[in-house]
Image 1 (cartoon, rainbow, N blue to C red):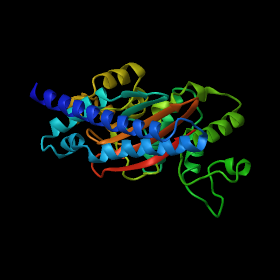
Image 2: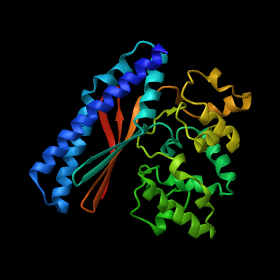
Image 3: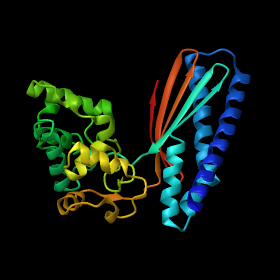
Image 4: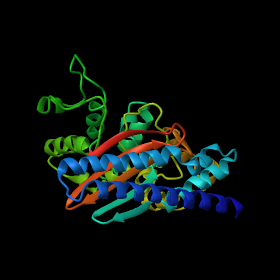
Length: 303
């Protein structure tokens, strides 16, 4: 009970702090201009983004999560924090904003496919559930293997798309280039049945990327263990208090499958989505923020 109280207090103080900071930012914007155009809107967006980053970096409440010597308190405080701050709305005069915070390590990073053959085999097994040809994995590998002077690619995707970026998969839009090529090649669209939104997270971090099992989505559990949806949903629903492999109560086969992936039970890296609406203009900014290093990375702007 005491641990829950500490975690809730940390979350409450953070929400108060960020609400005050965003409120001050809104006042500055409204005082500066009563009119709006696309250029001014971009400036206002940068102001709000700076406010969000500053409160994340200066938050003593978030520091308490990281600096706690009790690992159980760390995990519990982080879990409650993410649960309570999943969606925070703000509004002031003609500006509306929402802030969404979630774990940035809840999904599988396809750019780690080259790390282990077992990981590739696990993805092929998962795709087989949806009757997707194993060649799809080879197409994924082409988009993260870099430029090959001898043209020893696994598919001929670059014959059709010679300027396609091939160092790593950047986004869903980038993945759609592969998906469209696959559909054209095999004349079927079973890829539409895969929940890519909850399966993949795109990061150029290929070596250090670690899945946090306390936030793994249902499709990710299916990928990790090669299990059915019922078993995956059970593991997802019981998450939040996992601290070791024992807590998962896995079978021997499931334990063996899990070894193909880099996992942990506490990865204090959050995914932040900021949406701002003003006079019909809309922008979304997504980035991940490391609570330990206090750095934001992987910034994506959608206008």
